[in-house]
Length: 186
Image 1 (cartoon, one colour):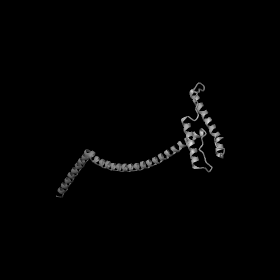
Image 2 (cartoon, one colour; image 1 turned 90 degrees about the horizontal axis):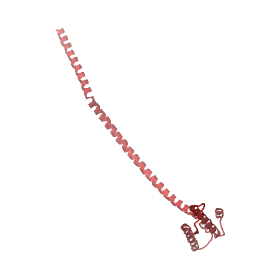
Image 3 (cartoon, one colour; image 1 turned 180 degrees about the vertical axis):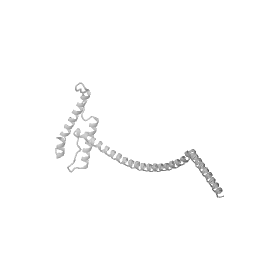
């Protein structure tokens, strides 16, 4: 009877081993068959996590970009205001240089006189400037050519007009000059 129990137990163990082997083969077969689906779910989870990280990075990038844009806009507006101010100052300086090239200097009053006299002198200076700008301060009706070029002739006439006006304005200048004015005339 012992032998019978041993044989029976041995056969049960063999059958269980056979069924276990068959079960593991089926599991392996199913894993092979459905591995794409199993991997897909893992991949889907990984992609979702990556998508969330990317969204968060995009939001951080957008906020940083907006902050930089606001800063650059502010710097641009400040630079534009400075540019406009400097452009205005340059135009005033260019105007003064044009006047100086014709011998017109802004008068500096160092004496005690009435405000009406100063205003009259300023008005006269403005009239002179306007005549120069209009080309009516010194007129040459003859059309000159230099080396057969009318353009060079017009250039020569303009330079001679400047010399003439400089000489005229220097001649009628007040006798009392400051050292700076004497040096600038030289």
